[in-house]
Length: 233
Image 1 (cartoon, rainbow, N blue to C red):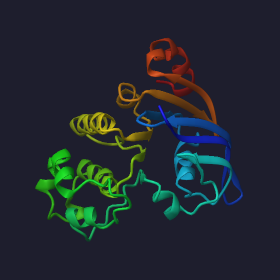
Image 2 (cartoon, rainbow, N blue to C red):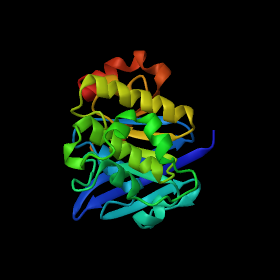
Image 3 (cartoon, rainbow, N blue to C red):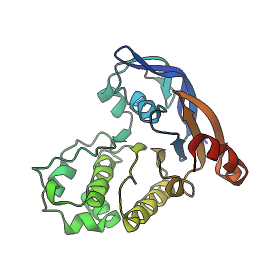
Image 4 (cartoon, one colour):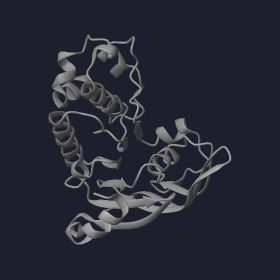
């Protein structure tokens, strides 16, 4: 598989706070990769760094072979990256469909509204509802759907299952399976190990701003003791 992303010796800072300490990882095209770790381990900072959304970065972040560590976020997005933050960022005063139409299409690969509504029938039913009237699950679907419209092929998803009802979490799992089947590359930050385990091809475990372990899905059963040690799962 072609390499979509390679991070080498990445350091990241918020002001004077040194958060990432020499992170190394790679992601191949079409893979689903999950970042695991306790709160404060640096997982969200890692994916924000990929998008250029931290104060200062050093090291190397190559996206499809292009060095982007000194690029601005809008330049990085135009390579076909989409970031879904934990807080979702739904505009409360806009309707569901207006939220969908707001971001520009950055590549011709963006999904049409009809394609999005086929993937998220709940959003079709709520297309005229204001953002404040959507349930937490509907807001999460909308946040993901919005970046699919832009044409992004590398998706950075931060805690998309957090606080949602099991039926919605199952719908999000089906969505990720569908996107993977369509060739999307996905990096997930997840606290919900049961949600992430059957979806990911590979796992990275972070602690204190560093990658401390990595393994493939096929190795999951033999790594459970190590997961208990790092995650308490």
